Image (cartoon, rainbow, N blue to C red; front, side):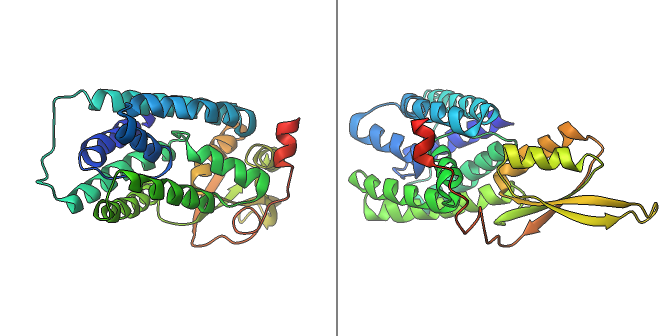
Length: 282
């Protein structure tokens, strides 16, 4: 599924963004800038730019996330290389609105599929996650500002009209990513009922760096007291959370709740600072 998501994203970038001179945000946007200015194939720059970020991610985000990032980056680079060499074109008769909508729909669905199954293409996601973990800056805020910078720089090769349609593409893309990840909500609330609640709690706090609340409850049939876990995570963390729970207790009861808005530590307030620069020094 990660491979299919990367193939869809690569298809959208090649046949709609590149073909119609639409820009993009993040690392993809940087590769399009390099292609326009220096004629460098995005298939190569995608991999080369992500390589140092993956190394940083391996150090700070864990082995599993780094492996998924390497795989996602490799698959996206391969997809871009293949699609650019396929003798195929989609003639939209110069209609930039259709191009932006089609790219947003296909690319957004592909990226959402990629994220839903625990994958990532690296890039600014890694930077945003590091800033969230060590500086308390919400991922959405970091990603937004990075995209703004890249889009502004993209004006060196696109005009104002093309940039306006790029913004339409970016909006449709973001909505499809959220929809594919099970809805356009800011967070997910998870309730877990398990006899191994302490092991699951420790794993969540250690691996996801998320706070956990233990709620006292009582079994309706047995009338025995028991603890329930309540934790709020970002949509992109839901896959890893399920893995942690199922690894510890395959019979655990899990309820996923859509959270319209999450405020507080880890989402809108700063998390405890663990020394971003200090990590590098060590």
